[in-house]
Image (cartoon, rainbow, N blue to C red; front, side):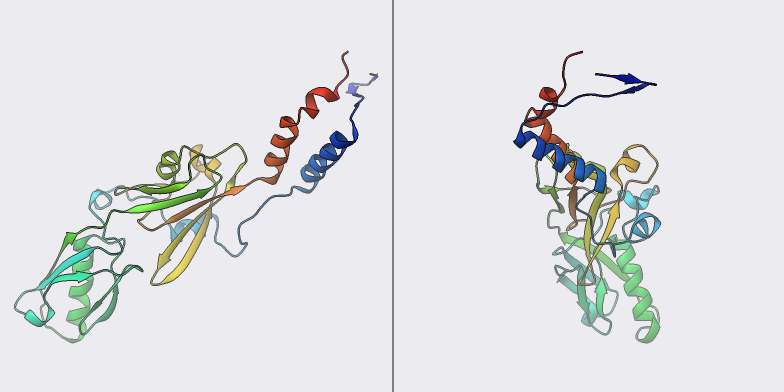
Length: 244
């Protein structure tokens, strides 16, 4: 070992397999090799525009309609527009006479009633009085997969967030890529996604996005962390340094 103006040189004694692992690790560190989400997926403010944080008012505590829920929709003195059972499809939509397809998932019954009232008033009924009730609720759930301790499908309640879903999955693993947490959501039959930075959310630098039933959370893998973990597991690092 030689010291030269504050610089410490460490002589390594590595066998051939260890040299190969070390070279791979150094290559990953130098190149910043990671598994990355699709660059087209929105990030930052654009991500929160698609999948926003929970509201702070009373609306967030109300039940929100989910896919496959069964509703009762009643229009006062309009029997042809009154249904005791009308189902929300797997995409979160329902078909309604005169109006057509209406997106219901993620809305409270009152919000859906307001939407139906406004659209009926536009062209069909002078002063419609609409009420919406949830008669059968399919359990809301989200899927959490990727680099978490216990991937799976988890039931969620109203106001559930990304952090609460990850907590149900026993948190991220040591090789998780914390700035590559992707949330997928189906809206109007179209699959949408957004990328979130879990480190910023945990530190309070970014809001915690709200999840809805049917959302899918995918935690990315850090190749650098994974290679470093394998390197340590092989015992190469601890055998590489000479005593001094």
